[in-house]
Length: 266
Image (cartoon, rainbow, N blue to C red; front, side, top):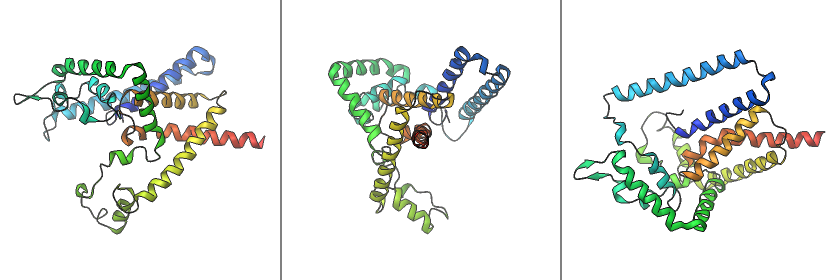
């Protein structure tokens, strides 16, 4: 998952933090041999997968792949400082289209330009401007039940790969619902917004009663915190970045409703 969407590593970071916390504060409750075995299996799986994917990427013949032309980390910091946190058109042309004299500039060559643009944006915002900017980004990634699907709007009929399923009646019906510019999307968006309100309410209930939590809950809390920090720093309000944190959000929300019912029963 990390190789597909990097922020998924936040789940792993959260797990590591909680394991360390357990070792420090509740060492008597941990079966250390079992923990070591699980850790070895987990990191072996991650390492084997990453090495395998990197090997394939560098040896496949489908397209040219060279990491020195990949996006610089600072590119996404700079993008996160645009008005919506994801407005590529606001980046300088030399950064957005890094071609000079017929040659593509490498990430190393672009680094100084990115750093300069980031400093200028921060200077132009000022302290109050940055606070307002972060507030806007926060609003984008919490208010929309479709998780920014309308903003993405990447699915269009012309890009559909024709198969028996996509050309079937049910395939067309599905696209009528989830494609932004199709007839039933507005009803789908309303349904998702209502569902999202219930999810957020569950989170409110959860954090109202979160004082005594399990270590599993603590992992999900850290994932939620990490997700908010990630989105605040980088691109906010986009479904492909928000959706990866849904498992933690929905589980914490569900626990919130469970605790509410438990307190009523008792």
